Image (cartoon, rainbow over the protein chains, first blue to last red):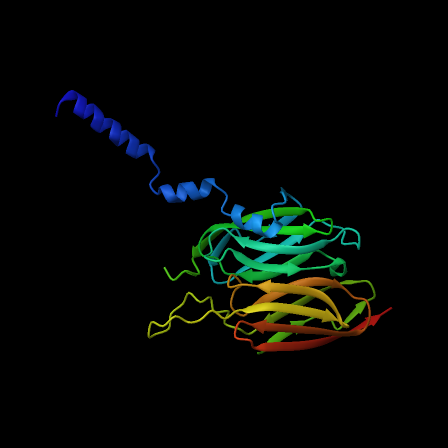
Length: 152
Length: 106
């Protein structure tokens, strides 16, 4: 092996070491998995971060049933209330988990349910207020045993 | 379809009460296969609505991301004695309903 060939070989090795093991996964982490669906839900309106809290165990033993609670900061009056809350999954084969429609009579903007999660992921909740603005909050859930929704 | 509904039996006027419902349903995702390798068709409860004395106070569109035997909890303001009516439907077109009554004091 001549010196140039060895140099080339070493540079290739260095490149391999620098590249992520699963480029797909790294790329997915960088661009927002929620963006296309969010556009569809909000019709292109901006989604502000904040006011929404997603409460869920940091570590879920089983993805088949993960307790999850969403609460929004809102006075819940006729003039200013939460119209709907949409739950999105970052990794499920069907990212739209559920939509809950509330009204001024809800009293407390709070919804709890149990969700299926196909592996560790971020769960996003988007709330639409009565003035038409969108707010979002999310929670990271570590799932030990996936719900294996996509039969893989 | 069997369901269990939980609301307080009594409440004060204007009090925020918690309403809970759990419905017995497999919430089939459509991604599973039976023992013979045939795909089990998707069948989830896709719609749940709750009316309080005739007026809708809560509605939910559910998907396969909701766990089997779906459980939903929300809040509402107790206004008058009366009845909560819960109605839902699954992908197979099966409907279910459940009622619960509440008495308002004060």
